[in-house]
Image (cartoon, rainbow, N blue to C red; front, side, top):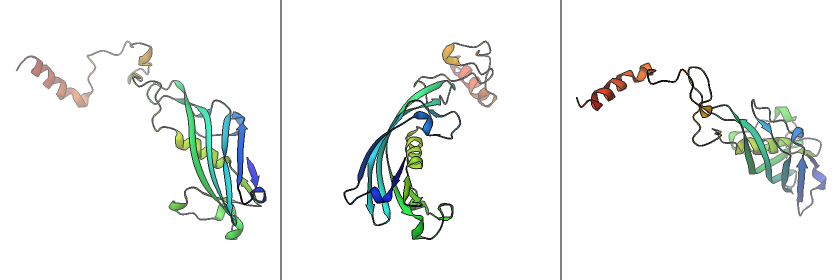
Length: 179
């Protein structure tokens, strides 16, 4: 996903790409791209600065935060990036210091802009913090680890009371007896 800066004219450069799902590595545990990635957008140039407005559409395979079953999450995310030339500061890509306000700023070298990191960021930023297979997911048994969506386990019974809540259980029983 590289573009030559010289190819970007005054009117900008629009693009539509379809990337094979294996071309983009997410580098996150238990997260992978499930289908091919559609990337579209436009590049505009102002001197040596290049601005990207893009959209990424794909589907990622993640794990449910409660029961750890795999689930498929659709992604349709807009993203922006600002590319600056490494020759502006006479530093290599690894030596450029960016501030917190430059979160969407990337550095390019040799007049080549690589959109890979911007697309990856667009996908990761569209991911929910907590992924659930269903809104009513019951999770896993805290004692044996069985997926409670598939049925109750043998260790799940009312005699188990979290020691931190034992005094509330006593209060509840006293309240139900009317005393």
